[in-house]
Amino acid sequence: MGHELVQISPTGLPPANESGLGAAPQALDRAISAARADLSRSSSGPRTFYIETFGCQMNVHDSEKVAGVLMARGLRPVENQAEADLVLYNTCSIREKAAQKVFSRLGAFRKASRQAGKIIGVLGCVAQQEGEKIFARAPWVSLVCGSASYTRLPELLEQVKAGRSRVRGLSLETGECFETELVRRDNPFSAYVTIIEGCDEPCAFCVVPMTRGRERSRPSERILADCRRLAEEGYTEIQLLGQIVNHWQDPSSARRSFAGLLSQVAEIPGVRRVRFATSHPRYFTPEIVRAIENHPALCDQVHLPVQSGSSRVLSRMRRAYTREEYLEKINCIRSARRAISISTDIIVGFCGETREDFEQTVALLDQVEYDQVFSFKFSPRPDTAAAGFEDTVPEDEKRRRLAELQEHQRVIQLRRNQALVGGECEVLVESFQPRLQQAVGRTTSNRVVNFPGRPEWVGRYVQVRVTAAGPNSLVGVRADQALSGGVGAPWAIATCTVDGRKATAARRV
Ligand code: SAH
Ligand code: F3S
Image 1: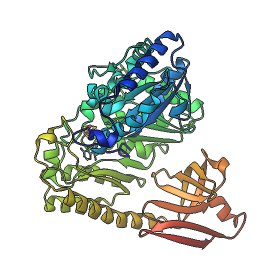
Image 2 (image 1 turned 60 degrees about the horizontal axis):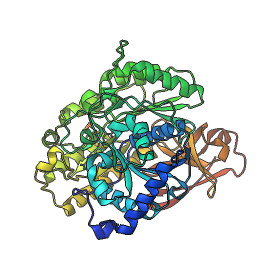
Image 3 (image 1 turned 120 degrees about the horizontal axis):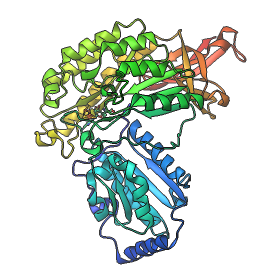
Image 4 (image 1 turned 90 degrees about the vertical axis):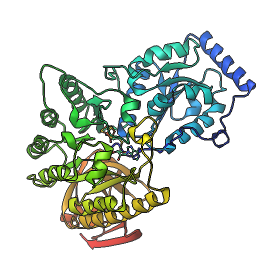
């Protein structure tokens, strides 16, 4: 989902003493000029690169594509910034603290920038929003580029290589998507595929339309060709991405619908799981639910951000649906032939949110019984409509509401997860924890499952019997071991967190 995001301040800039970023001393300027001169003398330019990424899945995938662009030009990825000739920092500005983090992180790169030939670049949403201010506060940065200008990256890098300082890619005027010959994928079995970039929605709180530009959809043929190639390369899970993924509109003559695209991706041989994020309720149709029903490869999961349970707040947020209209979409998902888990994003303390509005959001949690909720305190963002509204809910009250909402949801999640104990689920193993000898994976409904396993199971699908449940994860045992009496001890011991406390569950298998 697009919600594991760093926070940034409404002002965008921390005080100079906090980040250590004041006017650059002359010595530093001299070192930077020397490094640039060095670079322009060298015909080879940077040979290695390192990208640090913050933010949503879209940012993670953008970095994978940027890495592909660099590798196609002969640059080699390295494990840390110290070894890299080119350090790129891909940033997020969805909430308040990210800009502070960006500037303090750039402060850490200041010393590194003195190394001859080292180039520092800032990418992503903070690059787009802060633009020139980044050069002013961190003169050791040579390149600032927002995501709408990534197609220009090769040209911009040439300029940096030629010794130019303050190279910028800040135009939002693009109709193009970021297509690359190569993508350096970080995960060997689950692949991201962007289907739509930008966002044209008027959500009053959200900075994305200002940082990622106008909506632009990729043609279905190109998306399907990407997915087929990924399946041939051995990827079994495909995650279709877009800030407003279900508003994808096929620009090709095939004129496929979003539900049609989902179905076609799901039918590609070798594709076992398809996810998509993030959907906007306004464009969520029953056809999407029918597609999920008809294609087992489409995961039993929908992420449908509601933001608030109060129609009054929704209207101020300019979300273009009421609580009742949202609930109709939920009913449609709940009435599907197979159980589909539902997750959401919620903002508490939006401008003008009363206690009663907030209580309607809490009541919505009970009504929908979400499987997962990502909740945030409202943080005013520059250039958004809400920046002009009065931020009426005090910080303390926002904090209280957030804690109350999260506690309420924790109980719901625990109950829903505990209902799964004793049942079986198929788990795609995503990692292995050697210390605990535990495999960690996900169900099709996007629940995390921990169970005793082996390192070679990573990337495989394992049938697991659920033995215990906490609010945020399940624990279990491999079902075929369980059925055959197990390989070792006839008891499965598992730990999980229940009611905030570590609990150990033991059960005969
Ligand atoms: N469509 C996007 C939404 C991006 S933002 C996606 O792909 O997920 C992710 C979530 O962050 C939003 O759904 C919203 O709940 C939250 N968010 C966005 N702007 C915010 C703000 N100004 N303050 C607090 N939370 C915000
Ligand atoms: Fe943001 Fe609303 Fe688009 S939350 S990404 S403006 S759908």
